[in-house]
Length: 502
Image (cartoon, one colour):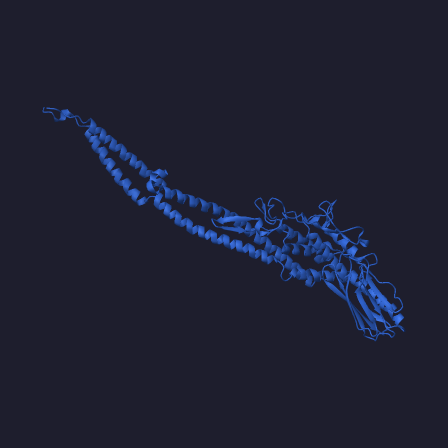
């Protein structure tokens, strides 16, 4: 009789216990991590799909990071544009009721306020998000504007706006104070007026003349330089007859001077007394013309000159030199290009060609990019800056009889300019384009959230486990393992002697 051993069976039992223990450890890992396996290989045929889903989710996360960063920049940009727009509107409103009352500095309260408002605008234009300046175009690490003090006052070697305006006003006014016009003494019964130098960019420019003076022959503007001749007839003009001269101003506007004949012994402003003879009347007409031109030159011309100088100053950048008066201002006859060495260049950001918006782009989706770049020298922003700055940089003399009229002419021009010109870019246009980028970003973010949820659910179905199912499997396995261990324990106590007869 042979007796079989139990060693092989014991080994199988032990291996079974080890397998169950290993299975229990894996289930506990799944319960803790929520994942079926720790490697793609454990997913079987679904491993390729899982890799693809992870790649798509990673791409979405990258786009969402970009969306977050761009969203912050766009929010700050809108805030800056809103503040600049509010400041422009505040200055425009102040111009409607501004009164001419200067202090010892030669400026009004509104002009002093304009300096602070200009400083606030420059502060908004210098908005920085992280290490990026929003209004510097492609030069995101470069501040977009110079300091307010340098822009207005210049520094030791460079002229600021104040100096540029002063030089231009002197050149436009001329040494005689007649806006670079020549008005010689009447020659018999003929009065004439002409520009001083042909082609000069300075001073009043003769545009046209119309007359109702009885018997007078009026010609011009003709010649080089242009001139106008007013030849009174053989008889005097009648009371109430008039002559109107129109002048072009440096800022592109125009102004008129109407002189009216009167029999009054005390002619009023822009009136000339009818004399005993046409020659005597011509003398009076020449005097009235000289006085009228001097008043226009000291008021409307000075305001237009300041506007022109401010426009030239703020139209300059690193690639476009500012236009300055060439030579001694009072006798200058030409403009010359300034340079960064002798003139403050207010805009210090990138000044390349092309759309400002295109200077900053971001891909927020696989097929969608947004453009949100800005330059501080864009037309709408530059216009706001130069019109506030011209107020802050202009000053007046208490002894100047034309100062009040000049200030009124300037405030009217600034108010109209800040109101905007039809067809030109406005700050709201920039804000609308930035808002369009914000809408695209918000839409992309919403799509990404939906896509992320869908992809995550699909990935969870591949990689994830059911906690309830794993829990029940663990419970069942624990029960089976316990029973196996008990059985194994009992079997380990079996002895052959227990089955042998005594």
